[in-house]
Amino acid sequence: MVPLLLVLLLALILFGAGFALKALWWIAVIVLVVWLLGFVLRPAASGGRRGRWYRW
Image (tube, rainbow, N blue to C red; front, top):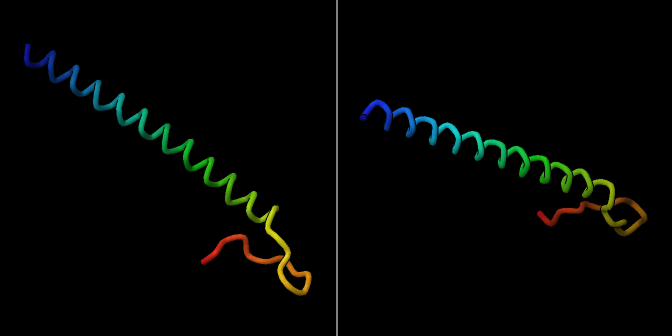
């Protein structure tokens, strides 16, 4: 009984880790797209040059 519970617990942990990693990959892709769009859509600064799209 205990080995069966350990196997089920291990499967649950591995499934949870796999789901979390897949979610993190999607978040990373979304952040990358937003970051790249920032370079394309950044507003013009004074003097006609392209300014920074971020505030820091």
